Length: 340
Image (cartoon, rainbow, N blue to C red; front, side, top):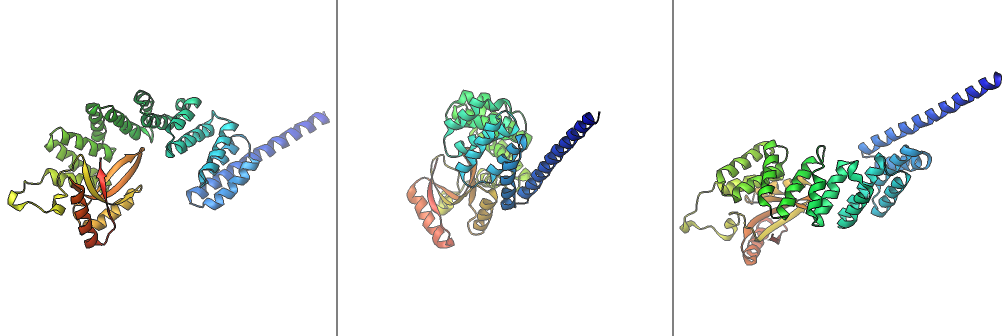
């Protein structure tokens, strides 16, 4: 009896120690998350390195996953993500690591490898984020049927609006302008995406529905004030509501730069930014002296790029002349860019 009781006590002691250790790891992981949210990255990295050595199972995977996200070296991050996947590829941390590896390959332009990583692991079955990144990889590979199938699986969450916009891009690239505009219309009417509202306004403009396009651009201005799309909408409204200028009052080259956008030609560019705030700040400064300045927002490899620009010119000579006048007057660096 004494021996049995001693064994029971020993078992309970061991269980208690294990529970205590697991609680300590959980507390340390909580501390790390707080460090990361507080931008104390150096402190977080020190703690994560220790946790990666001592923790086990899911806790070790989480520590490694968080550690990879703090690495400035892409190659180091890739090695750590691969270790997370090696430990277990089918749980949350394994899935997230596969997505991060695919995002790295996408960022460096290896869309085939990004697609392959997610496709081989079947990650789309577990994560809508994976479906989105695999889908946009398919777009870049011009595999539009695969892209449609993958992006259509993104039904909710953070990536849903982006997936819907990407589906519109698929239709645009497939020369299905009507379907693309219909998708933009659906999103525009839900008032959740300034990009969709602006694109739909452009669709209406191209269809000759000037009054409807004007209404859409005005709604965009009211709903998403101080966004790059709002600045673009304001410029569109200036064009769509402008009264015809008599021939005797034909504007100069610089003034004519603010006329209807051209489908091809040249423009003067002051800067390109990934951060909307920086683009808006520069455009606001320039507008004091250059009212026609605008922000062109595009998806470059499915990442938003905001370009601060002025003018639409039919010839490079006109654009260069305007650039020189602006540069001398404002002492602001700028360059002539070709419009698509």
